[in-house]
Amino acid sequence: HTSDNNDEYESNITAPAVGSYAYGYRFSVDAGATWTYCDLNGGNDDGNGGISVAELGPMDVVLNGCTDSGATNYDSNATNDDGTCAYNVTFSVDMRCSGLDTTSGVEIRSNASDGQPASSSAFGSMGTLTETAGIWTGTLSLQGGDWEWKAKVAGDDSSGWETRSNRSINAAAGASATVVYDDFGAGTCTPGC
Image (cartoon, rainbow, N blue to C red; front, side, top):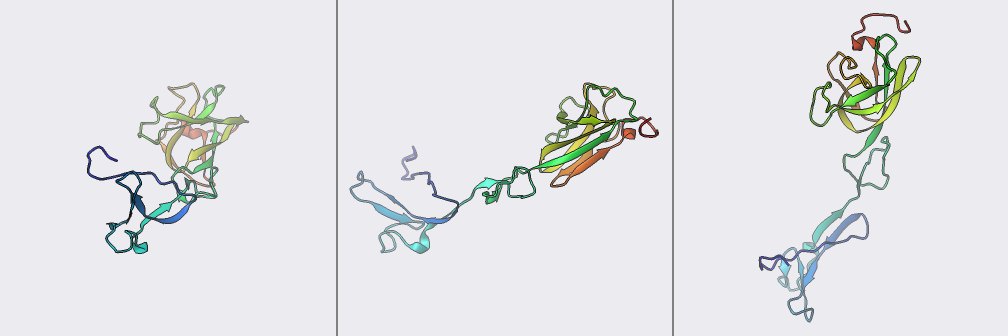
């Protein structure tokens, strides 16, 4: 019972499974000696002990989760998509002509939440890539939706950023992105130089 003494009562209902239900309720003012049964119209107003099937309250029980079968965290039991789907997104950064020291690695950075510029310290790492012959690649798991991002040489907060404006990618099944050397201001050269 709520504290304002206005005859309002609250209760939690635990449903046995996902589905649609109809509910009524009952209450007692004499410690359970008698009960008043109620529906959405209240109690004892329909000549049927207070309950009318047509006036039962509706209750839909859902299971939140990722409902996209193309996502890495797909939940086949979920009945309501709660926006948590994650997708593997493949990134490739060709650093063969960047002229930058990449011994500390290459990472993908993003700040989808507050729109900070890419050079901001708040622009956090999404993940570090792996190098093969000057090309850095990796598959990162991202929550579905639009992301702004840039490639960056790990540990180099001054010249290690791409010189272009933020990139955009929609994280969804099969998404990928490629960055080449000239986006680091290296000019034109033949990859592998």
